[in-house]
Every structure is written in structure tokens, then in C-alpha cells.
Length: 183
Image (cartoon, rainbow, N blue to C red; front, side, top):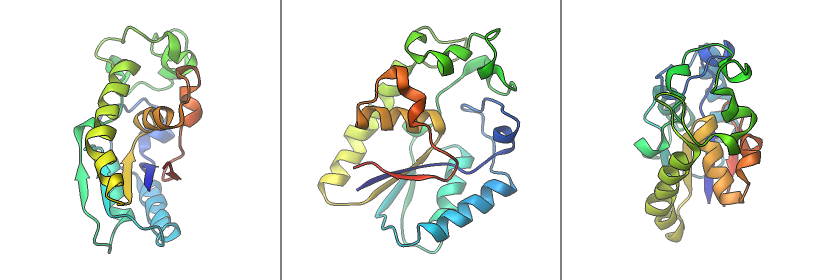
């Protein structure tokens, strides 16, 4: 089985700031949500966990799997989508004044990245490589795999596996510490 989880809450989540690749840690609520997820999903079996190298994802994985003998392996291909110069800005994804809002309102039109940003094609390429190179061989061995990541990166994997078109990219968005079984 393949499972995917989004990291716990951060202060930037509550402030509606774009995090992207900025390394923002979990806040107290995020830690508490990860601890609650550990209890809620204690009977779900995982053989291995792969996570984003960003601290909010790694810490979520560590809290979730505390007391289990499950290796946690960071992988750069699971890092969040880069939102370039708009990372750290409040509500920039909700204001048409900022070109980054097209990522969230019309993802199919986001073909040229904002300064320092990443396109959906680049996101799909790196997560697709991860699925093919890492996850597929694990699943073929009958192993249960957990991925702990981010809203955008997770949505990229979910859209690929569930054949969701780019226009509906954000319909695959997950809540903090939500666990979803994919395959």
C-alpha cells in the first residue's frame, strides 16, 4: 500500500503565508496534530517512510512514527514546490496583484514560473521519478510505504496516481496531518 500525509501546522499556515521551500518548523498546534495522528493511525502498518527534507515534514514523520521501527528517509524530490520570491508573503496566493495567484486559481495557465519558482511540469517530473525509482519497487515487494510531504508536492503525486487533470490540481489538497491511502 502507498500512503501519503501532509505535515503538521506551522505558524506560516495560520498566517496564510506561502511556505514553499522555506524551512518553517511545526508550531505547537502542528506538534499536537502530529501526536493525535500518531494515535489515530497507530494500527496502520508502514514498512518505510519517505519524507521531504524540510523540518516540518521530517518532524511530522518522527512524531507520527515514534516508538515504531520504521525508517524515515528524506528525499529531495519530495520537497515542496518552490513559489520563488513570493515565499513568506501573506495572502500572495489570493491576490491577483501577485502573479503567483495563477498557481492556485488557474494552474493550467502556470507555464512560466515566477522569479525563483517551479512549474507544475518540473514538480510532476521529480515526483514521477521518485514514484518510479523508489515507490514502485517497494510496492512490488509488498511493502507499505508512507510519504510525508506538503500541500503542493502531495497534490502532484495524488493527481498523477488518480489521473486528476491540472485544472483540478488543488482538489487533491490535503489538510495538515491527514493520511490518505493511494494504492
